[in-house]
Length: 117
Image (cartoon, rainbow, N blue to C red):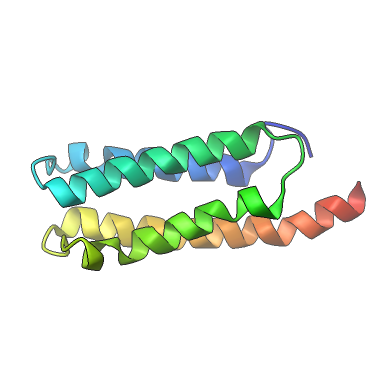
């Protein structure tokens, strides 16, 4: 399909930007566990999305990393005890589910792209 053309990679970047911005938007940067989780996971999602977008051919190994990040992000509010910060906790859960759906969509497209090549 070519580098910089897969919408799923750009969706990963967009979800990362949204997650990264969440503590600023809701003025919750003082909640250390919650805000740093959003910053770190959002930053990782941006980097992985850009890296995946830059590749000519998608591979399941690289494209599966956002799913792992999504699972970690989904359990983070409980593991890091920031369920009491509902704005960031809910955004973590929503972004995690969207990330999982996005990754599944991308992994379903991979066999079709390699067969067409």
